[in-house]
Image (tube, rainbow, N blue to C red):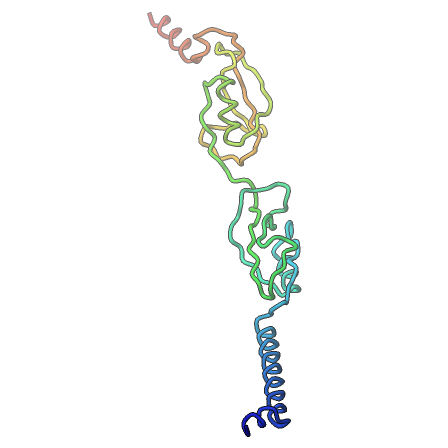
Length: 204
């Protein structure tokens, strides 16, 4: 009976109330501490840094308490400045915690250079798809006297004659010099043959 009276006494009830208050206060302090040390509920909107140079990116992310890491250089995109950001992860507008690392893909300095395939003596119908498949553009088409009609005799870029195997930037324009179907076989295989025959005839 004395224990029951103690359990319903004001002293015991006050002790229970103090204990519950202390427990609630402890839980509140722990949650506050965890939130302040792990940035719980703190969200930072990732800025849009596409098209920015690294110098601007560093300033922009530093102001937002974020970091960056370059993961790759993609194929050259002429719509963006050289060495600028063309992809970012997380994307702009996403919410992240403070000091989060933003992964970047940069635009290289230009199109990579490719070896020019040997399309000499190929027909225009064969040569153009071959060059276009590699990323080259076809420029002016001119003709010279040659028995092989539409047969590629020379390649040029900005007035300079090209040889198979030369390096040229992707998307560069290549001008083609084709045969017009005129002339004869002896002229087509070179004037040296005619000269040689003339010398032989004179010697006889």
